Amino acid sequence: MTTFKTKAAALLRFRAMLMIAAIGAGLSLGANRAVAAEDVTEDQIVRALAVPKGPPLIRGLSVDRPADDAATPPADDKFLQSVRGRTPRSFSSAEREEIATMAQAKPNIDLEITFDYDSANISQKSLRSVQALGRALTSPGLKGATFVVAGHTDAAGTDAYNQDLSERRADSIKRYLVEKFHIAGSDLVAVGYGKSKLKDPSRPLAEVNRRVQVVNMESKTAAKQP
Image (cartoon, rainbow, N blue to C red; front, side, top):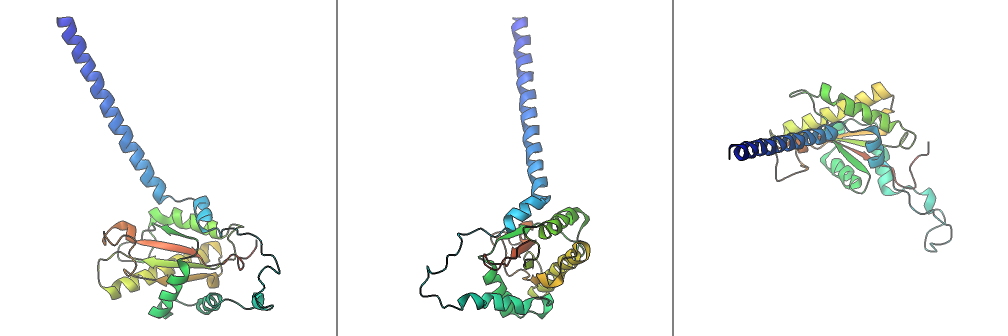
């Protein structure tokens, strides 16, 4: 009887150790997923921003197309040219909305870039993500395209405060990319949206809303070749 009780107790201890190990493994996997989400890689950014390759255009298939249509820039291309090189504060609300509308159909990626408290200074823990962004935008497949760098905040604070903060932070990312990776300033359109476009409206104060969205504004036909 004593031997049976001893074996039973040992079995219970062994099962308890297995449960503790399983819980520990689960916590470890969860931590790894969180780190991977923050430390976005250059390759992930390149794939997210790559312009999808469509079928080649064949002359003569569209009989209704004017002969000189290819030489006429689309309306969105004209608008994009008009906002290149401008500061975030120079955009009217209508222009910001026009950029947002154009960006909806373009390749984009949301980056969880954090900043120092109440500041536009990029935090040390986010520098790796910004550097990965710089390497991606200067890679052969993306170099020379026009990108929108859009700053977003959560819902804490007033509209005016968040609008200003998002503009300063978007401009901070742009200046870093220009200074450290020598990307032409005219190829980066920095714009701020404050708290007007929450990624998760059901959780207005969540970190997921504090983000920088990067959008490749080149079309299939306008994308520049390396």
